[in-house]
Amino acid sequence: MEQEFLSLTQGSMTVLEYEARFAELSKYAPHIVADERMKAKKFVMGLKPSLRTRLVAFDHRTLEQALSAACRQEGEMEQYLEEKKASQKRPAAPFQRQERKKATFQSPQRPVASGSGQVSSQRSPSGKKECPHYGRAHGSTKCWLVAGKCLKFGSSDHKIKDCPRIQQGAQRGPAPVVATAAPATGRPGRPRAPARVFALAREDAEQADHVTEGTVLFLSVHARVFFDTGATHTFISERFARQLALESGLESEDLEVPLSVHTPAGTVSTRKCIPSLPVCIEDRVLEGCFFLLKMKDYDAILGLDWLVEHYALVDCRGKKIVFRIPGEDEFSHPLPRNLAGKFVISAMRAMRMVNKGCDAFLASVVLIPKADESLTLAEIDVV
Image (cartoon, rainbow, N blue to C red; front, top):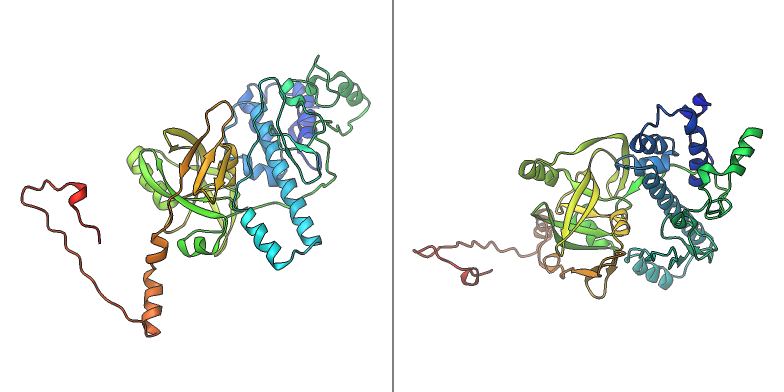
């Protein structure tokens, strides 16, 4: 049994089925899972690659945290595959494609759960309510995971890892466990899903409908960032990460498994991340895991994982990002219009325009301070 636990992997099981088997076999190897942190790490390393690469960089302190994160990621992946499959079956008209493109500009809003376990859930593509705690659909309005019930039979006397019926079935031979709270989808062996990001520079952002920009604080340092609902992960430029390391001493860490990222320039691989980097927005500190990536023009990309974790909703018409974190007051961060994008062009584009015959003018601006050197901000001319 101990050897079986050492070689245990998720395989074709769902996350909840894998967790039930993990809890059942962990009793035979207590020295390997002596504390919650070790147990969570062993659990994450046994997940299938498409989930493991998304969770391995995070420091899960308990098994419950790792389980909840894995369920959310599994739900997001299944929803993405269902939407992709549906779009391939029903090709949309040109105007419908444009409307769908605009719809992807908003990040999905996570519903808020009440203290009694009653959840306000959104509808999944299949028509069932999607649970906000692990991203899967179930028919009941009360989440068994929040209520501490057995996820297979709904009993309040025990949890699924201590379920006597499962243990009786294990004595007769291992059998797959189907959790009522999150039914299996019957899709074993899904392909590995690399990270993706659609904009690394201003030229990319001008072509993307799901990207908006703003300015936030990273450890008291102003940073120019993308809010990108099309990016699966959150990234920080290598240059800006070095600047933060010099000013605050915050160093990046090596990933156990390199992360492949699809970018407009092709697929690249990153091996470093900052597991817990605080971002200050409207006097609120919102932490996240940032993967290091080479990019220009911008300091960071706040992707879908960061937006979902902090219950963020990108309001395109209102030019703001709204945060609806459970148990806290709603707050928003304004996203000013990108006026610079209309009047500033790159040097390479300027050279191409000159070569095509466009007129170019060279201006020289010199700022001469007053003798007393007591200029105020209002007295400085802006050209």
